[in-house]
Length: 242
Picture (cartoon, rainbow, N blue to C red):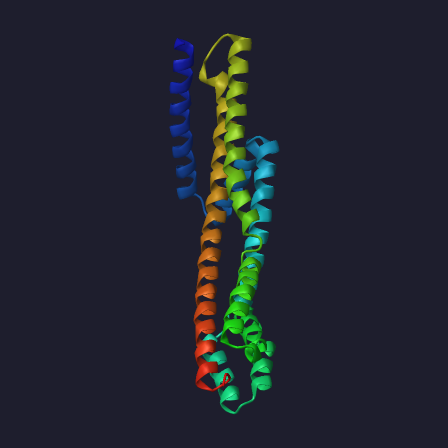
């Protein structure tokens, strides 16, 4: 029990020293040197878990970039779109209004098109079509988020697994040598620290992108709801239902 307590005290001391050493290197190094330090620390860690964590980062960033590009394309100027539809309906041109919505990219325009397509069936049919197709568009907007969440959860878990394996290696060395000197256990503890740090860094990076994507989706959904309400008002004002 005493040896176990000494080992964990040693682990805490080495953790602090390692963190201070990394900070000192980061503060004194230039941009290229910082990259070199990161590469060296990556190599010094257990390559099995470091490689998997790196794969999580690459795949997670790929999904994030895909979502960001898709959501930026899906962003529509809803006020301008509603005004164009209003102009067509004011002239009694329902087909022209449908063509305006159909030719405009983005989920908001698709929902408005479904509402206009069901206009002859009455306001209840329009509202039902908007709600139903809105659910479909919501699913498309959130496509891929589950994978980003998965990588956010897996990356630190892999880091912690590296920590456990590093500690097991340290205990194995203690058992084989019968001593708990720093030179014996430092290697295993270093691997444990590095895998944990890289796993947490990956999770933090992906979490920032995830929150940005969620906020982007919320903004698009709010515009979709406002445009849907505006469409019903425009159709009623222009006497689509008589």
